Structures are given as structure tokens and as C-alpha cells.
Amino acid sequence: MVDWAAMLRGGHVDVAVVQPTRVNAAGDFIGWTTAATPGLFAPGSSIDLASGGCRLIAMLPHAGADGSPNIVGGTSPVADCRGCVNLIVTDLAVLRVEESGLVLTEVAPGWTADDVASLTGSPISVAPDVKQFSSNLDSLNASRVNKVCPNGPSAIGDMPDGAVVMIDGFGGPGGMAHYLLVTLREQGTKGLTVISNTIGLARSVNFGTPPGKLAIDHSVIVESGQVAKAIATYPVSPSASRPSTFELAYRRGEVELELVPQGTLAERLRAGGAGIHAFYTPTGVGTLIAEGKETRTIDGKEYVLELALRADYCLIRGHKADTLGNVVYKGTSRNFNAVMAPAADITVIEVDEIVEPGELDPELIVTPGIYVDRIVKRPEGFSPYE
Image 1 (cartoon, rainbow, N blue to C red):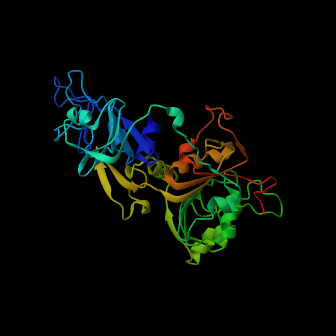
Image 2: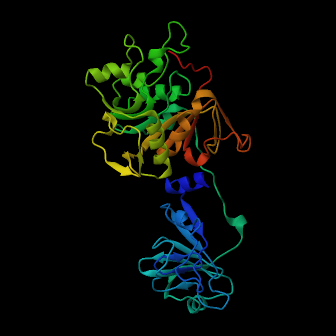
């Protein structure tokens, strides 16, 4: 339920269906209020569905058991949502909700537009192309979106200059989309704002790096002058004698930095993907982190307001994905990748293997395909070092 509600608030759902008790011509609907309990209602999940910003369809019987219409005129003092319904589907008809009123677009077999109008508690107009609706589901051809890209350039080639991009990273080189990072360097997109836990730390600490090699990390796009700003937790090396590429660029005044505590970064990412635009946290109160931010005292404790993070693109690393975008992680690739995936307009996953739907153990799937837009397989023999 928590993930489902986050999908709705985060804008990841295109169409939702509610089953209200009544709906009016303005697109308001009422869930469970009854004549015996006026003003008392149990919204359940209907308000979540209506608040998701998606196309909302109301499905209900055209009339009640006593013959009274369930589609009414006027307004109600109690409503689960006002002006939310885009389409009404009943056992007799399909009606569009427009600013001018209800428009009849489909009629059940054996019924006429006049029949529908007589059982509707609000005036309706009839669309010029009104038709009889069919229950023949075989006539509906559902096509799947192809999320698999043949290579890196086809996956991120449309990233424009000035884009905000999320790229995972922890202490070492594991868990990063190395192939996509190299692709991004080669295509030369510039003016980027990078959101990441680290910003080129793997190359400085050299965890497991073979002699004579350098880890591929965020440094490759910092060195090339493509990064304008970083929002990060670890922007500098733990060793003063081995400064990170970003650290040197920052000292030269070539890049900007927004420093974020690690836990706050994770929560800002999670909030961005779940449609929570801001939240209060005690982390950073009274420090440089809180400077210029709104604070509030709640139950005697001071909190700082943090804004959610979203990006235009997210480049993440997984182990396996099916063609629908369901992702299984391995090792350190699980760290920030999973929380970043829902928080971008376009999420691109780099994996070792792409399989058909049904081949992944559903209990092992961490990131569902609803959050993934493009999938690219890391080329055979590709090395995370150069």
C-alpha cells in the first residue's frame, strides 16, 4: 500500500479507476456517504487515486437500486474529490466530463441516448460520433512499450545541455552505471547538475582498482567540464593528498556545490519519487546545512524544511532487468539506485543481463518496471576501469 500510494503521488500512474457512490457533472464524486450517515464517509484509497494527477475514470451503476440516478447535478457538501473525474463509465453509457457538462460518447446495446438521458440526473449532450460500446476484449490490441535500447547513445542521446541527472555512487566503483557515464562523456552534454551520494570519490580512494588503472566514476564528466553543479554528500576525498577531481574543480571556482547530509539526501530522493514535495527533519538544525532554510518548532523540537529532489534523467546500475523494466540488484548497486529510480522523468538502467518477463523471481525485484523508462545492456567485456 505504501509503494502504491507513492506511485500515485509521484505521478507514475497514467490512469486510475474509482467506484464511487455518486458522481456529478462537475466531476466531483462521493465514496461511502449514505443518507443514514450524512457527512460521515470512509474515503479509503479513493482520495489517493483522485489526487494522483492522472486521468480518472469513475465506474458505477447508472442508477441505484431504487431507480434514482447515480449521476447527478449540482454540488455536494461532502466529496472525496472535486473536479477530478474525466470519464464516467456505467452499465448503460460512457460519458466525458467537460467544462460545458456531460457528453455521451457510448451507449450500451439495446439502449438509446434518450434512455440514458432519462436516467441521468444532470443534462447531457450527445457526441456526433456516439457509438455502441462493445464487451469484446479480443478486439482490444494492447501493445507493450519497448524499453530496451541497443546501446548507450540511443538510451541517453536526447539528454540536453543543462539537464539535472542522478547518478549513483558510494565509496568504491561498484554500483555505478560506468558504461552510461562513458557514453555521457563521449556525447559531451554540458552544464549538468549531478545529484549523487559521491561525486568522483571512487577514483580517489582506489578501492580494488587494478594497478595502472583509474576507476570510471563521476570524475569522467567533471574532468571534461560537463558538470556545472553537484548536489552531494561526499564531494571531497578522505585524503588531503589525493583530492577528487570535483574538489579541485570546486577550488578553481568551476563548479557549484550543494552539500546534503547522507540520510537527508536519501529522504529527499525518496520524497521526490513519492510526490512529497517537502518535509521537516531535525538533521542539520543549527549548522551550515540549515542556513537560509525555513525552520519550525514541533513538540518543542526544532526542525529544518528540506525540499524533495527530482531530476530530468537518472542513470542507474542493476544486475538484471526484464524487458518491462523490473530490476534485480547485486551488491553495492542496491544503495542509492533504488531510491533514485522513481525520482526522475526518464530513468535509464544499465544491466548485465536482460531477460523476458516472468524469468525474474518476483521476490527479488526491488525496482518495479513502472519506474524504469529505458534499459541498456552493458557491452560484453566492458571494464569499469580505464
